[in-house]
Image (cartoon, rainbow, N blue to C red):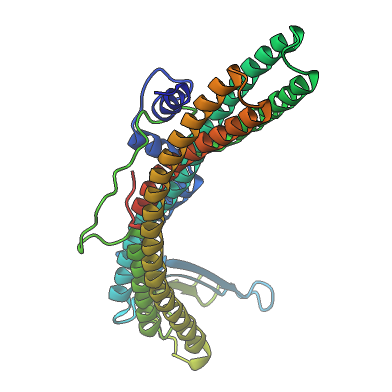
Length: 398
């Protein structure tokens, strides 16, 4: 097995900067815990719980207390006084409480499904970052081997120039190749640094999974895609909102109890009385029409987005399947190309050592072999990434 292949396999198996191996699932849970989307989704679940508490309460709002005091001290000053205290509570409009509970249940269901969809989105970011990093690492491995080969060739040519076997122009040509290889290695290292930083931002760690490979997972008809489930719950929540708007055609009525104490003049015996009050607001188009229209707009928008989501997910799955098929073919062809280029490079090196071929031909063969090795490493990373991408399109988290 070639040295570069061993190095590539090392990068694809051994985590950077960690002696403790972690599974892909562990890394995903780290990314989820570290994501702002996850924290927001959990907060929305708590918001839905609070909405359910309000819907199940005895009254649709908070009770009110009122105080009133009347006196003639500032005009006749006969000692007439009147004090009143009242407590009123709002009442549910018939059908409103059940509609509010249904809306709270829809909110809870939407928040739960939203969490699943958000986890899938985080998984997509992790998969992209992870395989971008592995791809960059494979480029570093090949770039390092290219630089090593160029340095060895430069040392050999330098020796030959000193003994007069080769011209100085050949040495200058090899030096150009060494400089180019060194620049390519530096650029590859920079890509690794960028990819590592992105991976660290997502997971909060440099640790890579011990086995990043994902087998392609099948889904059954009973398994609903998390994004579809979230879209469906959004539409159901909009329907519940429409129902609540229809059942809330007026503001909440209220009933109250009044206690009054009054005195006609100074020294007179105070009189106490108790009264009851009820307030029934009228329904009106000025109030109701905008609320119902807004709820209807939300419902139409949610239904339209759900239908679009169905088409989008189906297209994404088909595209991911096609990409996987293409990646498999590309990986097979890359193996053939690498083997042919490596064999040709071996022959050209032998011919160069025997003085049967020119240096420029050796450099061309070496460049082609390097390109083939880079293509092989990338094709393998693309194949693994395509498998992960198909799982992503099917709604499967690591």
